[in-house]
Image 1 (cartoon, each protein chain N blue to C red):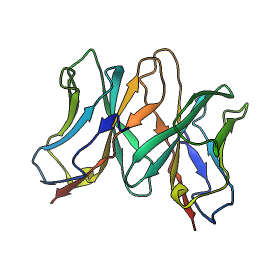
Image 2: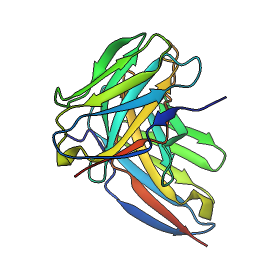
Image 3: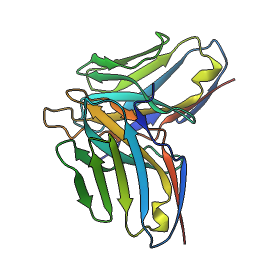
Length: 112
Length: 115
């Protein structure tokens, strides 16, 4: 039972344009959401997060939007750079728990 | 500050064997979690240890077990290996305080191939 879903396995974007990665979840008990980035042969690295009490969080070129009513979040990367090419995982955490539920990932390719 | 260290990085086993993977968390981190990554399933939570106690467990059979030592280092064991156990096993550490952001710091993983 996949509680966090990333329905797009891959995305290609031109350098300098916006990348939008989407994520849906089913569990209304999730109160914290995170995005991780993973390069081949490396472990995932934390990118940005958002609490369920907010609808937007921004960090440099990265912005995460949360729509609780739709149980949907998205990661915007502006402008996209070739070094952003990686697999991006959306993750969610329930109140009081420390384990994360991950999506299956979206492979982003930024074309120079 | 040293990151999360996992050993071995790569290993090959045959069906029916057992395997032990090791994880050293970031200094000062007392929580260690294990995840299994497979191509079709993404990252699946195995279990979490904090202060040598298993605090949470994912939906995996009893063949998967783990433990944590007093220095916060952790090991996971998989017994009676099956072909489907071939995966990247990731260890993550965190501070796990009341105000935690939920951020996990991952190691590079141990890639297990079962033949």
